[in-house]
Image (cartoon, rainbow, N blue to C red; front, side, top):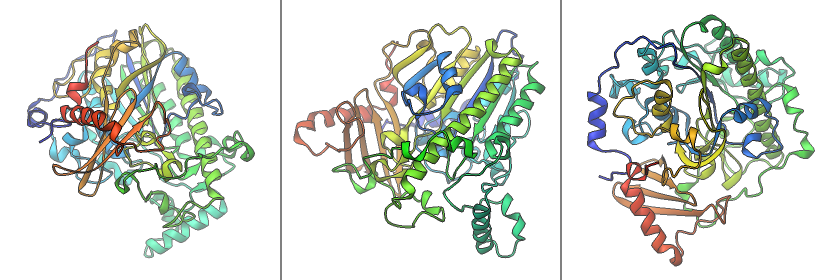
Length: 493
């Protein structure tokens, strides 16, 4: 079996590592504000996207370190978030998609990241989407062991204009014919792919998350806390108050130009974008309607600006309570997102746009701010936060602490970042080096397809060059690097 992602020893250590004992937190240890943003690619001002209106996240970036090359371990919500919160890679959790068994059925005694803080005397609390599941009907996935109090979500209602409500009610009546029509607001109902309601921020899901986070900070600020705040947008449907859409006039929206599959890419690399096709205005087959492309591109930007405003409200409260100097702030996206690039809408691929994520850390006593080009992975967050807080970390974690980079962003760091996503029985395993993205698709031990993209000369990944003879030696080298696995890529400081 390949050593790339998993060994028998790693699995055994998950079962054998004991629960951390209860400890009293030292006064000098920092609070943690753990901010998750769903489906957010690095489309922010602080990542060089000058057209984006994201002043609050950009201000956080000025006071922290921006990781220019951060990657998720699986480009879909549940698998990525489990990897972050357990510190284990998908080949260990055996969770690769949004489905599957509860991870506790496999690892009943594993200590999650928030649970580790709780076990060391912190108040640990979840607001909004942290584990996969943004509503009460998926509460079983939110792992009660991890939190000091039950997790909290707003209701799942999505639509607020007359036409959006009518469409959602029609879908609800068709799918739930025996239930009262007014119950549509508490169900997972998908109607149109976007909406532009003229409502206040706090009417929508993420405004309510910010409201609850602010109220919670006021309540818990006198004790050490690990507060996880999960915003849902820019996840589809793209719904934000009209004032955020107005920040991006239609005549200034520029859809992606490479709305075609990469030249030479195998069919396994692509996706039929099943989730976007669940919305009533997106066809089940065929291309995205041309009139919808600029609207969805605009809507994604509007949702980012809406979430940015909510992040700003939470950070403002942190400042007003005098907590900023002793609070470790982490803002991350769980995976990337395609807006038509590579002929894909959504995520669930091994391409750069699916796997690259924003990551910003602002920590007390960090010596460096600005940007780092070091390759890092979201699985690295667990050991990093433990080190920053002065906590012991479980021995079986599969990431590497990024703390040295907070003091010297130019350190020699990892040789590669690892991601994976399956297509049925075929697994795609991908590594990103400083220049190359190499993906190998295998069914068991048999390789069925390979991809190689030169992100130095082809930053958009428009051509798979794996079949070219002049790259045969490089592919052999990258195959060996993939086989050697993530442990071999964690070179020293």
